[in-house]
Amino acid sequence: MLPNPTLDQLQVFLTVAESGSFSAASRALNRAQSVISYTIANLEAQLEMPLFERSGSRQPKLTDAGRVMLEDARRIVTDLQVMRARVKGLKTGLEAEVAVAISVMVPTNATVDVLAEFRDRFPLVSLRLDTGELGTMLELVTSGKSTIGIGGVLKQDDALAIERIGYSFMMPVAAPTHPLARLGRPLSLADVREEVQLVVTDASNLTKGKDFNVLSYKIWHVSDIATKHQLIRGGLGWGGLPASLIMEDLQKGRLVPLALDAYDQRENPIYAVRKLDNPPGPAAAWMIEAFRSRLSRCPKQADFNAAIEMFHPEDRQLAAE
Image 1: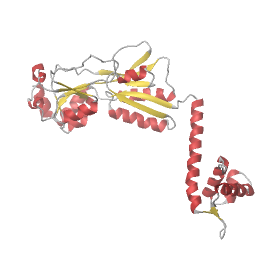
Image 2: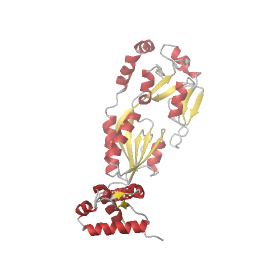
Image 3: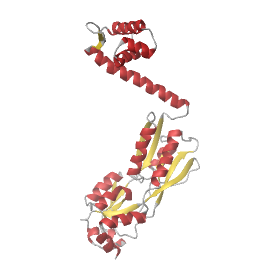
Image 4: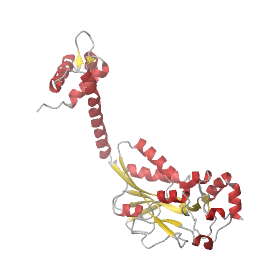
């Protein structure tokens, strides 16, 4: 078996290739030029191929094989540097991974903004992201699969630290071609009873047997918000969707809000949740604060409705009559 190149050999090889000469490499590494030449010769012998063309030029020139090996050497040295940085982070308490569960009620743009900054601030910390409906986030945190959770809370638990960091709300909507949207007036329970309502079925056990804002007699159950969103846009039924998810649809007229007093549109708190016996490390703690800061800037319901009215003032006025 051929001996493997050492890290020192690869670093010398990189220095020679990048500095352009053996003498420059010796100065950069503070080693005798003869040592640099000997190290490269040993590396070439181990690889059984020349890395530099030495004849006819005072400066070493990479061979075709040398150019290929250069990329491999850079990758190996970079990987080692990443490993060293990760070890340094672990010694100072920085997590190797943050596992976060985020409810679909959390505005998507807030999640994207926070995770983009997280990537830049903690490039060596791995991320595991789970999203889900209703009780899924809470189950993931309670089971220990997620370090922190961001979303609504269906029940209190003495084993959990629960801190309010924002709010969200659901809005009943339908496609503009839907019969409810065409009524052009405030809706009563009688109006919606016989129309298909799309409802998300939660995968967790925390909401088993519970219904939220279910008003119709005709129910279509779907597994996730994304499917519900697409079916409502397709005119297959009506239902409530997170307001932050449908802003663009409302602005462009792909969906219209339904004036339905029976549908609970209260602002629902969004919490940061973690197990008491599993305090967050620096990266997870930063993420909680980042979500708090970002969610505090989300528009309140009155502001949201005012923004929608700017695009469809005649529809909003008619619905309020």
